[in-house]
Amino acid sequence: MSDFMIIGVAIVLTERNGFLFELQREAKWKRGPDAIIEIGMSCIGGTVEEGESLENALQREATEEIGCRVAFDRSAKPFSLDPAGNVSTLPPGSVPDGVQFLWEGNDPGFVPGAVVAVYAGHATARAAPGDLSGIVTLESGLFHQLATESSTIQHLEQQGAILREQTRIPRSARVKPVGTAARLLDLRRRYPELLNRILPRS
Image 1: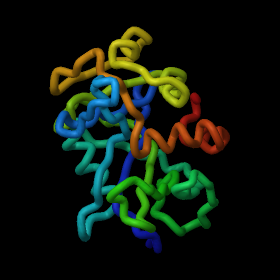
Image 2: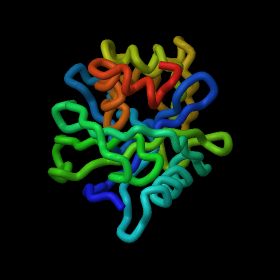
Image 3: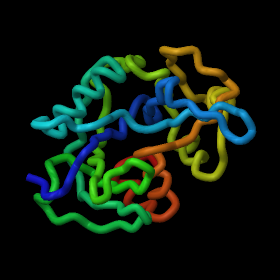
Image 4: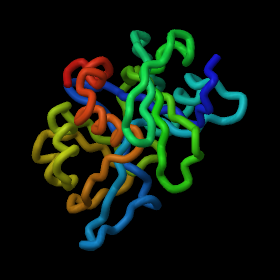
């Protein structure tokens, strides 16, 4: 049993030759200073309800968001990522089996000391957007470009991204990695060897 205050779960999903991410619901879209719509992009996941195991919470969220269950990669040497981006190794047995890493946020509204548990795996059927505006599959190199340059939906599609929409998404909208996706890019910059454990093709 974990001694951490885990309030959320997420999963890094591999699909074909890339990784599958969610695009936030339209209610969460924002306009930047230049009036361009910004859409948050993160990993599939959400909150853990009272009395719910982490894996059950993730299966519930996956079913709601992409219409299917997920399979977990059980090989993990777990670590934690603090709000400043510093990494600490977690001792064996300190987190549930299959957790790749924990991250603690410092975003407005984030509970101090609370963490998100991140798994890795793949969808067990063809994913389709459920209660999301859309989902997008990015080849790893294209995802890593988001660490240094912003991209529009149109640009990502031109570079080979596969977009599946529930809501019509403006092609001029800019994608902004948030949540777990933003932490993956932090790992890419600072600890690429740790990211390679989770994303073998990165």
